[in-house]
Length: 315
Length: 315
Image (cartoon, rainbow over the protein chains, first blue to last red):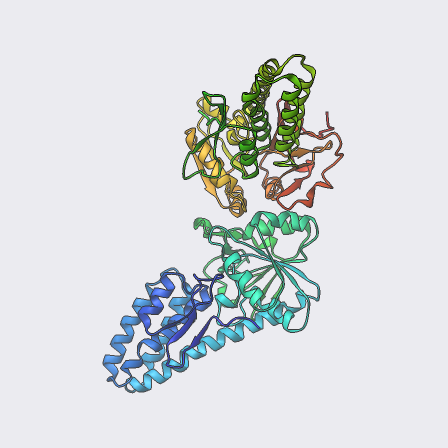
């Protein structure tokens, strides 16, 4: 059973696992308002593009609980302030802006006073979360045939339950294969410099009872050479139209090593990760926390729309 | 000017830089006897194959200072005890055993009492150190033409002044190029899991005034793809007859990435590192702290006997 990274608390606050405290402690926090959610995003208590969007949407709901009795204009004015506050918590997060815009549009188009709008926002935030859970599951189903019984899978960074509202993206096929009773072994890159693999991925896999071994990033090449890796599964932050994709630094060398050793290399991501405005990945390499993996190294893409083999073509 | 990792103290103790304290503090310790040297080797205050051998030889001398007035048999009996004590400090270190055997043989073959033997041992330990310094310099001269003005060099782990009695092995061509007034930029792999690059190599290069950038091991691939690396220079723990070589984990993926991007990849090591009993590197991959780089990935070997291009052939 995978960990659940976010939930409503019984009183309507946003309940999160403080990811800074992992793996030493599992610390749940109830974020009572939008300010607390913004702070949690800023300080990386909550991370992962899908999870940030969900948390922000839920934060708007938690943060307007006290305004349910307010007249429409007062409610919308305060909501607008909270949208800007949350958007500013991580200005580069596309998913965060998308979720906030969706919430704001719903509020603007619904007639009525604060209580009616609030009820609708609560439903909308829950829908954003539920859609993400379903999306993760579809990715998992698309990738499930790639992870047979006995599979040895290498992954990088954290594209798991702790990054989403559901069972993750790159880890989704792994969770479903485990659910199906398959025995797996996951090699987890520690993922320097921020150690998302060591702190988060190894923790969430162990929590779910899936066998894993933490490795130094630089050990992946030797493992492949010794035929100890059947498959590489990674997530993506952005996929260009031609299939080049940006992801955490260290993804690109894994792709080269996988190609060199004949190991299949799959990228798993929501189809919304495809950026129609980017023809290829040539411009996306300016941030040293990320690298770009050219499409020619990718065996396939696992999205909520199924498994897609190159050539990618962007649709 | 490179740092000097070892020296005689004014009173005849073995003066070392405690490498556990780097880079936060430069802490010099005077090791008064063989026990203290053995402890320093065990606890990684002193590391690097050549440096360990030198430290052990000097430790025998420091540890028998008080016995200079002793009769021959008493002196040799105590010397034998100290040889075993030091050899046990790191049983896998070939160079340590080699240096101790050389010291013991010199003592056994010299007639006379304690004082004469001690003088000879002092000269022998100093010779072992001086030979290592000269060996480093020859490696540096062999590799110097590979490091032109403006060169951007990537290195892994620490094969520098802190690993030897002189200017290192992989770093020796870099120090000589810097001495020659060439402007260089060195990318230093942090070298997980023990961080020898981050703690030692970056420190000793900065100490010498050589510009360097510390990178996550997983960032090397992107740098090569962006044509920011002209040359990879690494050391070797053991070189097989066919040119396969064992070195710190993470060396092999660098070799694959270098080949993939057309970046020259050089291994620098004393010619004594070649192990005539190993036909190839197939058996040497059992220790997960090390990996084996097949000879076919190596552009050339820089040894104290000069620069050698493959095929290697073992002589």
